[in-house]
Length: 612
Image (cartoon, rainbow, N blue to C red):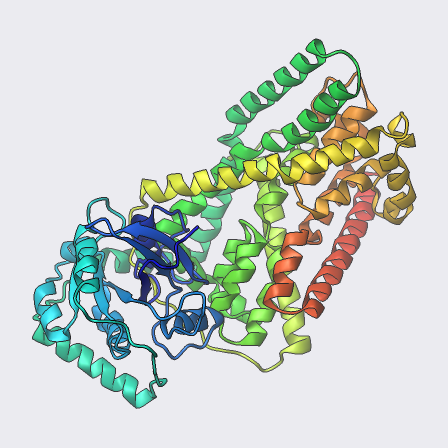
């Protein structure tokens, strides 16, 4: 609970200036940070204590280059700065965060903020990188010419923000009060050019010496941004990542599997026969254990994603794919939301706020659920482990190749859908794409460790809440009113709906798994584990072995095809409704359901014909 009576301090600045990193350092939070713009799309708040121990409220804003807001995230930043949000009000202090290596651009926005009359501090961030590149910035001289306090900071290093905390005390105690109202006019093009001229004058008066450009970054970019070699490297990197997902995670998955089996055996050997033993062993342990085992694969995948994000490579990937995405009608800024959707469609859909044109934003939202989110990983890896041989194909592992193919299928499907929708609904509409490429950085262990811990927490929280509750419900439906499971409520429901899914090769057990899978996709794996455990009281084999014996290969492939297009979870639908409209939500649901059914139908019958 954040005390609203604390002085309110806003962190504002251009994208990729290090605001979220500074917010995390000040408040001890773990907001996602990455070395590319557009990571923060809504304001975050926390508290910290100044050097004198005074509590203050910190607001972290999305990055923006000006108060001339165009995209939804920039509108959020502008409205908070101008005090238009009643929940925030007019800030007592603005901390404008500026990249020390890019003051010519970032200082222009600082001048715009200074004109509002709100007490302000300029935090010149990343001064360590600037010094290494030969920049010489005299913060005292810059402070004198600007007429505001200027402090150097390194947000990603401990002990490098003490000067800022002292400056907060000094500024708040200076007697410079915030205005009752903030009146701001949107600067015209001429006024923006005038601000730029003022920026150059201030930098000249402060004696700022510019260092060398990021020579290393330029040299690396000549290779990584090459239209042919760059794309080949990008595909190769993604290919190696998916190989590692299987090869690196094998040992920890075996240990988790052994642990789950040990707990199940202990429950079976300790408790007397009855409902409690069945609930624990067949429902909760079999269900949740079927999902938790895939945690190592998820962490390996995000380990690489975090490194690529923190290093600055992801912004290059967006640049490389801009031509391809533009060819199908997507805006270049769609790359970041689509990339976020590989973790979860919800932050991906929210990240579309960085897209200015509404039609481009809507198009990106509609295809974001086709990106392979982490909730699909347990489904994919279970079916691959059950039906795809673990053998080498040349230098590569066959299971890793199939996993790469599933991810590629989701991405390519999204591009095809975007191409069709663009031609049908948004013809002749195209906006330009401008993106600031950050310098390369060595990834920091803090961001990677915190990022992995956050993914672990999210995964285990879902296992301990959503999946746990669903497992209890599934066990009740699968146990009552009587056994065997075919005569239970779940069996009756599954057999009732089975004719609808028979053409795509699904049996009634699979149908049972699809329904709760709407709550969270990985729940399908947990439900399959529970349903087959209850079906066979003497079941001693793993779930993968059970499915291998119960399903045909065409059925397994059809199940994978279904989950490439599978209708998004309820939480994703709710976010689509919040970000767009109820109509868009239903359009998304029905078109994805239709795609999933058609893809599974085609896959099942083609595979059956080939294998027969």
